[in-house]
Length: 122
Image (cartoon, rainbow, N blue to C red; front, top):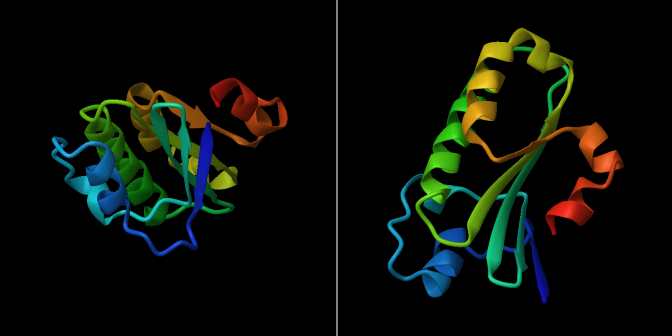
């Protein structure tokens, strides 16, 4: 069974996760509203998407934040964080992207989407 929740739904994620995993200690992600939340069988996929055409501090902060979210979700059974990102901006922030890539299990770009990664993932 596949359940899809769009960002436009104003339900707080921490309420959803606490219903599924009442024992979980949710810190960083409880304040986050994800672009997509997909529940497939027993796994909840928290999905963020973005594209950066230019560099700047926003990329560094995003990479740092998503690295923290990744570490947090690894403590919650059956919850996976997925990040789709792309753009020329990452050429200026390669180090931060590399650091996040090393801890994030599911980090993809537009080419991965074109090649059907969602079908493999879900």
